[in-house]
Length: 399
Image (cartoon, rainbow, N blue to C red; front, side, top):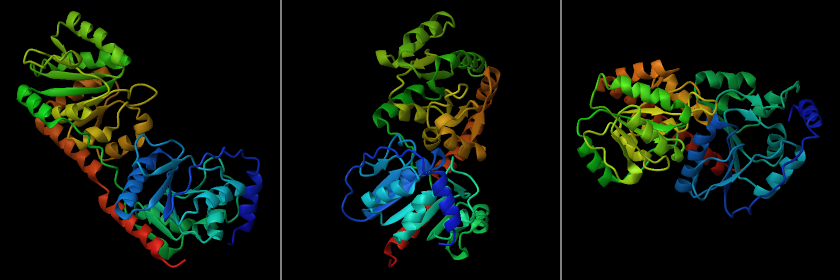
């Protein structure tokens, strides 16, 4: 490969890197595909791709990422990525012996990619955006990026801009294709349908909104917003799920005593009767039920450093219009996808929440927002199919 100087300098500069202690399960027999998600922007999509490849094509899947995905298909093996040194690259490839490797976004791991090329293992870039040397290893490596990109068997870009960036950086013209951004795995949460039918009949035409995963320091703003919105819709019901279950008694007492609201607690089997103004529910269950019943959801946590507490795609998948604070936290990638399509409402403070909630009480406005969010959540199926087809083609190609 025509980048020996750059690779040599890279390996010399990183020879002191401390390799992670290997704790690898046994390699399963049969064809194995290694998928790598370098960060949260691609982890959900790669987790979904892993499940599809295993289910639809009976392939063994190794998924590597810096953080373990919250959920993954039972048959998918997860491991942290290896340190990018020649010795670690040889060790991990000796152990897993992948038949195909696919990296997301555009992260380039020079030592690993070079070793894979030497072993004639086909490597693809999927959901490709812009090429970059592994974060923390940037530097002056003559010809390294161009040489690495020239060794790929396929580059599947999210759009024309990404495709041009890949070609300019060194990917061969004939291997770059635009497939689009892969789909976000379905976030549809289940619920007890009989319970949903019963509660929907009980609520009838009442306007409802849901405060999901609400932290203690955002309780004031939700209470103020509910107080304000009830001036516009006096029958409005707030369903609130505190982030901390131990807050339920204190929150119920505050709403009863300080606000004078009739409050029901799901844990005590109390029902949202017509006179009830607030229903407090457990934080660990039935989110699928509340998203289905509430046309509007405020996702808590976005005002604090940790970011929103729930995956916004859950609400998007079930047709609830989303309100949130400015910080996405670990759900930032999903929130960014929704926000880029104007499929959520961002609020910065108590006044903003009250204003937006009042606007969304108009059913047509909430429905438009929810429809836009649903379109984002369900988008990308065609791109995932194209990606799967391209990877299977590489597996079938003669080595």
